[in-house]
Image 1 (cartoon, rainbow over the protein chains, first blue to last red):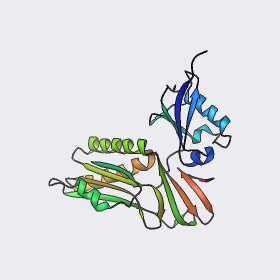
Image 2 (tube, rainbow over the protein chains, first blue to last red):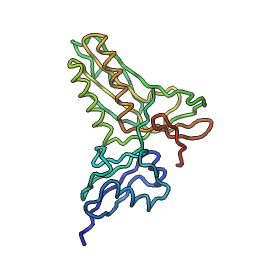
Image 3 (cartoon, rainbow over the protein chains, first blue to last red):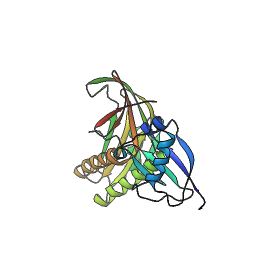
Image 4 (cartoon, rainbow over the protein chains, first blue to last red):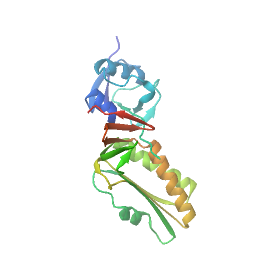
Length: 86
Length: 143
């Protein structure tokens, strides 16, 4: 059994309100992707957005694909689409 | 160059002072102002929230892109966060260039890129409720 890795999760805007937290420490299995991390978080916080198209994941301040693998010590952020405006 | 995310009021003149220099014959400054209506509803105030550690580097990247397209340009950007009242300045982009046409173009390009790519979110407190604005969608706030 591989040792778990630790990431620091941050939520912003609507996702922060849904999760009820700005930041949390999370342990996941080595090789976990952003998709896996978000899945773990959705089980902890059932109110979190279910539509993946309305969420972006970022690793260490870079927007990343859902298939991107997280590493020990990473800052993993989940953010809504940017506000836009005309 | 200057790129800020700040909780305090933004002074557009300060950003212009950053980009001005003897070769700059034109400074174009865009100021975004909190409006009293949205989606046909009256708005009482806004809350802006930023992922500052990502927003500032993204602003810097936009500034670098402006300098690739308009090599003589100098750029300053600031976005405010927290509670903003009607009429307050939420965002300023100031660009200097030798001539006005390129200053207008570069400033417009900069604010458009900022709006579509910098991780800052707007919560509208309106007559019909409180909403997060995400692109073309207004989604009810829960916090």
